[in-house]
Image 1 (cartoon, rainbow, N blue to C red):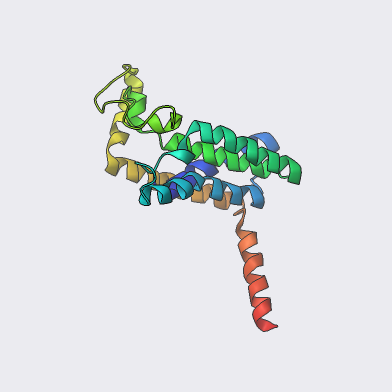
Image 2: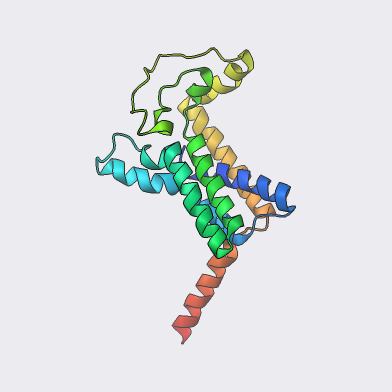
Length: 192
């Protein structure tokens, strides 16, 4: 999934959580935590892949073992600072990123490409591309199979991101006020 798709999935999930749990739109801090959390795994793994530290761009930070440790650290900081809602937003975003990177073929019974979830216990390329573990229900196969085409999935991702922009706008554009305050502070420094 591309970065906008990760942001879209993460914001959709957190917005649903905020509306369900707090009966309101996400706040600015949590919205910004969603933005960072939705990209966090790639911000760690992609540079390590480019530097040839790991064989793929889904290694350390995409692992569920890393996620478990990260959740403990994020909530420890969140509780200590009184930012539990922001910590929750970050955690939801990070976990949504990891889940969204699972190849859709896994829903069709093909585990190839899911090894990153259990890295380093399960090394990459453990499963063969054609190895199938189960036969999915016909409904799952009907819905998922078209999305395994990269062009169709890219279009789906674009539509999802556009819909999430509408949701973000309907939520009052949380996080935007931080940018406004930052630009106002910058312009005041220029005037002084």
